[in-house]
Image (cartoon, rainbow, N blue to C red; front, side, top):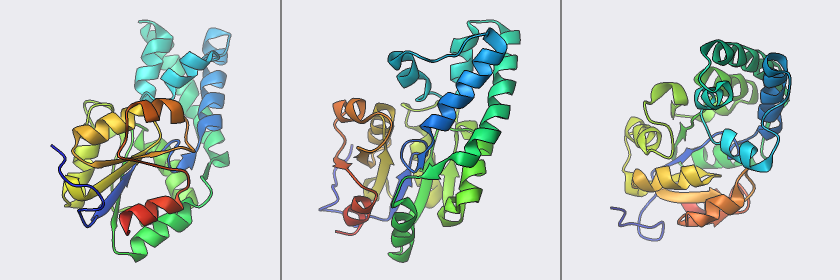
Length: 223
């Protein structure tokens, strides 16, 4: 049970979701899904808003299962086509404005930085190495590292444990409802970002805090 708030606890660490929180990657993700499904199925997916909202919150492996509808050959072909497409499209992704400054400020303040994402490590590293985010991260957990993806708390809990900090003195920052649920399940202090992919759905899960800019995360961590 969470018993502390940022007003009561000295924050030791900030753990982040990746897509929609640190990285503005939605266009690259959708382009990659559209390229892959057009190549394999002959038409792009997802297109409808509800489908897009569902797909971009899932691990890629889970999204391929939905797309393939039980056909292993289709699954394998879509997965291969998506990976090829994302390697190209990831070259255009960038951190949200103010993100790098925020991460450096947290490091300068002596806080540990973690990642808890459903994204595959190889795809995260494509962006993390290129942008320099990986150089600022102390410990990361990806979709490759967990049995149960968000909204299960496993990724967040493992990131907190890997950083060697207390859950109640950790901010978990994400853009979607699954992030808030996972953070609460891991007993972290939850922070939703309004500039991400799922602001309305995120607010429905009532995070402890909502921020409109990356800079506000620094203020929460060091009030």
